[in-house]
Image (cartoon, rainbow, N blue to C red; front, side, top):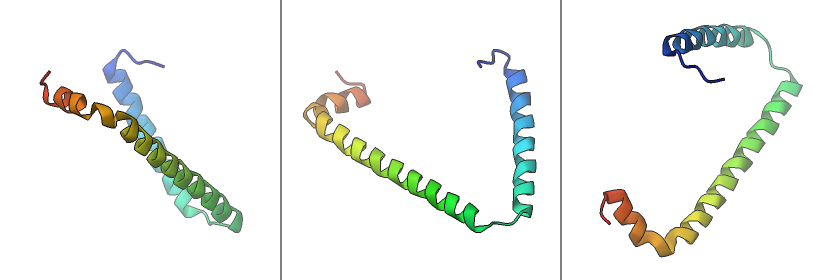
Amino acid sequence: MIWRDHAVAQGLGGMRRQVNESRAELALEGKMEEHHRFLLKVQLHRLQAAEEDLAILGQRLQEKLAPYATQLASRSTGKR
């Protein structure tokens, strides 16, 4: 959804932040069971795998862009 009225969007953002803070407070009052730890471990593993994939893709991009280093450098400094 695209908000055209900036004030409305900001107001909703503030409400959303309040709701998230309330939910976080409630979450901290609970207790963590073994299955919660298991799910968190699975999610952490997924995040680490995604970070590794991004590093591999970044390296591949660097390799493919290496022949164009001069052109890329001149574009970033505004020279042509």
